[in-house]
Each structure stands twice: as structure tokens, then as C-alpha cells.
Image 1 (tube, protein in one colour):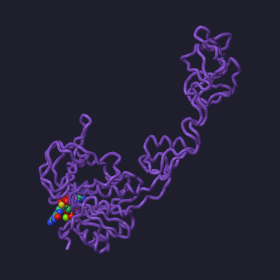
Image 2 (image 1 turned 30 degrees about the vertical axis):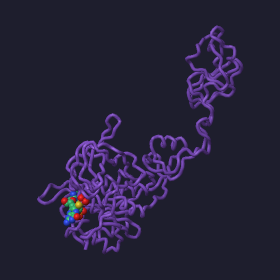
Image 3 (image 1 turned 90 degrees about the vertical axis):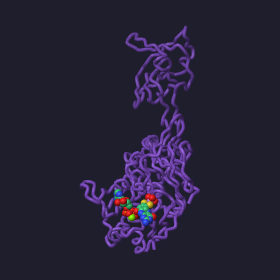
Image 4 (image 1 turned 180 degrees about the vertical axis):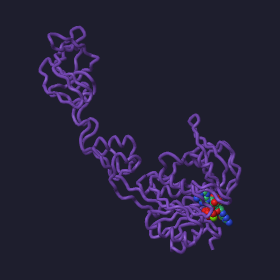
Length: 425
Ligand SMILES: Nc1nc2c(c(=O)[nH]1)N[C@H]1C(S)=C(S)[C@@H](COP(=O)(O)OP(=O)(O)OC[C@H]3O[C@@H](n4cnc5c(N)ncnc54)[C@H](O)[C@@H]3O)O[C@H]1N2
Ligand code: MOO
Ligand SMILES: [Mg+2]
């Protein structure tokens, strides 16, 4: 009964998944842990920046009026009465003919209204006192960083939804956000199915392979900004798998399984969805790899049945699970970013389905190029380590030639706003 599967288009599959997006609730986390998280509230200035008039130079705070007659030929002299560094406050108010030695970042002393940098002065010691010689005049306000010249109290500096990066983090610190309001991360459960699977520490045995999908997928989950919860591997036994899936669902926001989703005798996921009473959104997508990718919904929670084949599993995650996670954590760029690139090698295989070819992207003389890497089969694992992009080749063609301009999905970077739209099946 599962043999007759109707493939849907890639963008339809993504849209179907996004009908079940959720939004992570607000949580307050320490600023030190806030990198890459998405803000759940705007950052608002609760004080002016600068908070006080300050010196932007190492030099002397003067009364501009005292320098009015200063010229190269007839320099004027001011008596230096005090030194103030950043963080300190001047104790005295200069009277006519007096100045205060001041360092960058220090608050302007009362009574002064201009800064003269060290390089424009000459210091003179006389009778146990220090004087400076100034050879030009200064206007009130010269070389002062004024209070609020950058930002005023109440200004919104960064909107809700922005990702915390080093610049945003500087603002959070400036305004005293020791705790940062961000969107919660979803918990994404993972089960790897397959009687053939060995643990990473086990030696190979005839007919068996090591379980690489769960490591790959949990790494993709973390990279996408969610919390992976790995439950282990399951042998292909219906009751065992059913119990495991049903129990895990209570503890996670979404559940990923890898393998067991195709039409084989021991591919139990379709029957598990049926016994659960889950609503299967689709069980075939017109794409390679990952055509068998199945997504079901049960009580508002999604079950992603990713393929067991590593490359198919990888692509299924990036196209479908990644956007779901990114919506949850508050990103407005949930999809892989699409750019146009030049194909660096022929790709002669005709195919009715859209192909996502593991590729390496380069930029040469300002142009983007993409070169397919490794063997192009769903079961391949090694090419994934050398890919940073997926070349998109629409189905229904005889193949592609070196030099053709194609869509390229970037696996790294900040992501894109739009769902990929591909004309084919
Ligand atoms: N008669 C048909 N057979 C198959 C079809 C089809 O349309 N008709 N589709 C093929 C395609 S396409 C794919 S993709 C696979 C998908 O199979 P499953 O998702 O059911 O996955 P499994 O059968 O469990 O495993 C497939 C393959 O992947 C290896 N595997 C599984 N889990 C892991 C893991 N955790 N780490 C590494 N490798 C894993 C497994 O050993 C198999 O070699 O179905 C085709 N068949
Ligand atoms: O469609 Mo399979 O999922 O080619 O890899
Ligand atoms: Mg199978």
C-alpha cells in the first residue's frame, strides 16, 4: 500500500512543513551565552551615549575664550592645575588662564569647553608650576564628544528578531543586559533506525556499518540553533520502534528518525505513522537525494522521517528541518541562501527529479563557481565532508554542461528569506 507514492514539489514540501511552525517562547539567558541567539525584544537605549560630554583626545581641557588671541607668532600660556584620566573627575574649576590635563574618555571638567591635543602644545616648567603654550585659537565645542551625540535615551537600536553577533553584543553590554531576552531553542529528538548499525566505537562486522547519520544530524541540529536529544539507534523491529517513537514524542518539540522510511520489508516508519494516527503530510518529494523523505504531524508535532541514506538524510534536513528550527528560534532567514553560480563540470545524468548536488563553492574574480564533489549517489557519505553548497539542477532535462549558470544553495552563512522554487516535478 505504500508503494504508490505521489511525489510533491520541493517547495510544496517545505510549505507543508511550515504550516506547523511554532515560535520559541522568551527566555532570559546570560549575555556570555547569547552569541547567535535571536532577540525576543528590541534593545532600547536606557541612557544617552556618550552619557556625558567627554574628551575624545589625550590633551588639555581649556576655556576656548582664553585661546582667542593665540597665534603662531604670539602663543598664549595656560597654567595646568590638575590631571584627570578616564573614569576620574576633575576636582577644580579652571579660572581664566588655567587648563586641566585630560585623557581620552574623561568627563569634561566644569568650566572648560574645548580640548587641545597634546601634539599642539608645548609644556613649560617654571617656578614649580606647569604651563602649556598654545599657538592657535579654539572655539567652544572644539574636540568634544557631546552627551547623546551618538544615541539618545529611548532610541531603539536593534529590533526584536536580530541575531546576536559581536556588534549586537557590544550594545547589550553597553546597556547593561547581563541577561538577554531571546527565543527558546526547540528540542529536536533523533532516533537512527537500522539493524545494520554499529556504534562508533565498535569494530566493523560483515553486513554492518557504523551509524553516521545520528552524528551528522545532531551536528546539523546544533548548527541550525536547536538542542539535539539523541535517543540512540533502533533495530528494525516494528513494536520496538513504535514504542520508542511514541514515547520520545512527549519529550521533544519535533522528532527526527533516520532510515526505515522507504518501501522495504523492514522500513517501518510508514506503518508507525499509521498506528500512531499521525497525519502524513507527504511521503515522496520530487528530488534526489531525499525522495523518500516523509513528514507526518501528530498532535501538532512534526515527525521528520529522513532517509537512511546519508546524503539524502543530510539534504532532507537542510531543506525541511532547518527552516522549521529557524522559525522557532526567531530567524527571518530560515532557508538556505540561494545564489547563482557557474557549474565547473559537466553533469550529464538526465533525471525527472530535481537534483541537489553536493558541491564546493569558490569565488574567482568576483564570480561564484560550484564544482560537484565525490560520487553523486544518495548513499554516499564522503562527499558531504567536502561540500559547502548544493547545486540545484531542475529535473526533466538531459543534463547540464560546464559553464551553465545554476542555482546554488549555500550550506554555511546566514541563510535566505525565500523558499526555493524549482519548476520541475
Ligand atoms: N523499491 C524501492 N527501493 C528503494 C527506493 C524506492 O523508491 N523503491 N528508494 C531508494 C531511495 S531513493 C532511498 S534514499 C532509500 C531510502 O531508504 P530508507 O530511508 O528506508 O533507509 P534504510 O532503508 O533504512 O537505509 C538506506 C541506506 O542507508 C543506510 N543507513 C541507514 N541508517 C544509517 C545511519 N544511521 N548511518 C549510516 N547509514 C545508514 C542503510 O544501511 C542503507 O544502506 O531507499 C531506496 N530504496
Ligand atoms: O531519493 Mo533517495 O532519497 O535518492 O536518496
Ligand atoms: Mg529502506
